[in-house]
Length: 397
Image (cartoon, rainbow, N blue to C red; front, side, top):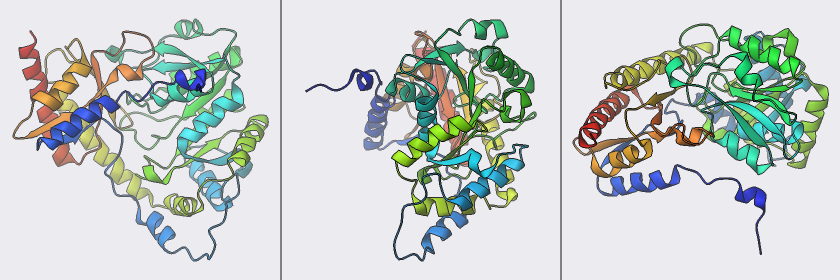
């Protein structure tokens, strides 16, 4: 009995081996500060849990395949705050942003097609694409310029007759980059000139700390080809809710997505009821969360740049930092932190960044850090990381 070549092409999680190192460290009595995963510790708004606790139905029924109308309306209203004008039939509810991305690739690509993605990129983009026979053409961005996009000519050089879309997250995971309006205009022009879809993963929209945030969905020239992927996971610290959405003004696309939504029947009813309340959350919650992450970013960044040889521009969004380290192998450094280093029984776990690249050899000397711990713990973790890196460099001269 054999399994498909398709699933064989999907790589296993690169973090699993490191989690074994972390578990061993904990078994030895060490405290491990996890900076390796984007799981916020921010309190989920009470309205979500209250809605689930107070559910009065006697039967927990399927929701409509397209999602609860009240949730769709709540999202539509939310988008007006960002000058995004969608009608209710231009929004569909999905099982997290992950299903939204997978359904999008199934709908716009055939097997053997490809999409352009700035690298480093959210590693599951690769897994989603490979699982449906779609390739990624990476557009390499650099730590030295804060992972902003290269020029138009370089991006266009990646396009071929199998290219169907440009996919990017804005603000970026794993880099924290926030693209300028000029960059988005360039992407829009390329998409129009080469007849490409634009898949805009905007789940970190609220986490912008400097400059202006612009959604590419507000650019008139590409409104018929923009697909916005969204989620409550990070915005409202509700990762376990698994409520996402897709928004697009392209009717044939939305009709195609709806077929997939109908095939998987529905998104969980209770979580949708909770998500309706999330979108009613007072804006003061998001402002407070934004300020909290800004402080966390500064704590981590200010320690990181004290080490000579570290290359890292201060990110403007999301809650991640990718830093180029003066080491040969960030994976080896991470394992060393877990197995051979601690300060008073405490150590830290970053995420090696090689898994966020597709181009061989890139990211081997970089780490991604998620500043998702409270400021007190993050300050400790930042100090441990700095001193650990300094010690590691002395041992490996």
